[in-house]
Image (cartoon, one colour):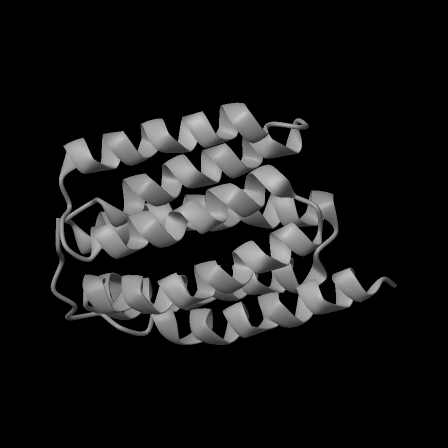
Length: 170
């Protein structure tokens, strides 16, 4: 095992810890702020694994996560999507990068959605996309990170929207 691989797994492990907490909060802004820390660590992890497009698109996510704490404007979301596609076009190196751009689009649809329930539903799809991607690039802790995020989100979704007596938010 290379040093870069070991370091990458340690960094994504730190992201895992912040993700464990993220979806246990109900407030959209709090969820997004905790996820921002995770995004920085995941980006570094991807660069260490020589996943350049994924590293840059994930680093770009820091900016759109931060902005999303201030607005849910669809125009802002579309401008970030355009920026994501530009980064994708300049850094594309393999079919694997398509998983990353799909994840970017799903994440943007999530975080710029003012409906908290819909935000979580788009996050489900994004997490599944990233689990497949991490499996393909062989990042075991990356898979664990996304599986944990998926489980944490599902737990909170159940508590907030399905559990008997929960107020539905359509």
